[in-house]
Image (cartoon, rainbow, N blue to C red; front, side, top):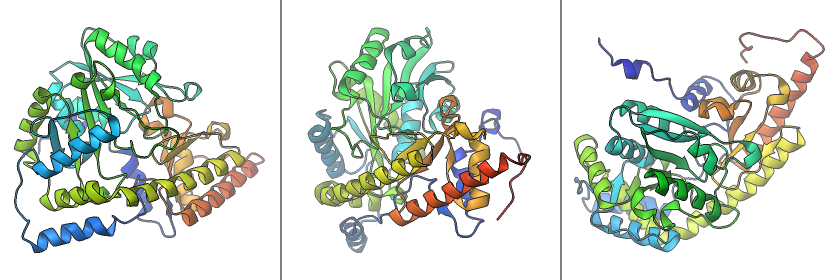
Length: 399
């Protein structure tokens, strides 16, 4: 059977690989997938159940329910200060992942280059490739708090560059960008006529200060596609519901692709999202408060073990360094999984700047986080003993 070469050449998701391996091993603690351990708030589930009882089982408009789009418009204006018309500047999608795919496909012609700020979420570059574009990495460094700088972007711009994809608060580092940081990026975008695809799905998980959207800066509203969703802040990962906001021309272009692929997001999820935006703020704030508490525990734990850990200021990921062990990110993750039963994600799957790091999610329970830290400590002790004996190379011993 023929498979398109561009699909054959795509690597599998480095995140899902370790998730799948873990499913075959007993007594595993997962710091891998960004999956909140909280169940979706009852009020949201109840609203959806009631919607089903009332017979809300139909298609919706391709754009999504108007009531939901009106609430998204209100939520975005009140939270970020950006005003979007719910009639043609807000599109409800099946998760932020679909929103990213639609945004890239809507603006990309063959050979166009899109800058990807790295470390980055794993789907950005494959989406660009599948759209016929060329992803161009823009590296950030821990020394600069994983913020993208004006000079980093300018060094990668060519006549084929059309856009930048960025994600702050960042997955996997937890870095954030201040208003001043974003103004530098906005200046470059305006000067070179670039679009910004801004994935802000972690905007409510900002622990130090208040999240600033680049779309709110002068001159950026109409050249930014703001992508957001309900998975992280409202613990609604399985509902697969996101949205895109932007200039009506680009949002309508995205809607055209959406109507020929997804047609519309599931109505049950949209009904739940309406309740989340109307009455879910208290539930969301309580979860964020708990993530913040876990953040402090895991960062303190890694640093105490000598695994220098950049202080995440947003999202729910830590990004400790394992360079001092002499193991690659992949070797460390695989051995840690097989020998101690702890799932992490090698930093290298998020791009070259992630080499020598691990992504460890702290949306696991506090009990699991403490146990995982204890097991990682035992793993490091084992590595120290190996230094007195020939280093074990090759495939790790299975538990």
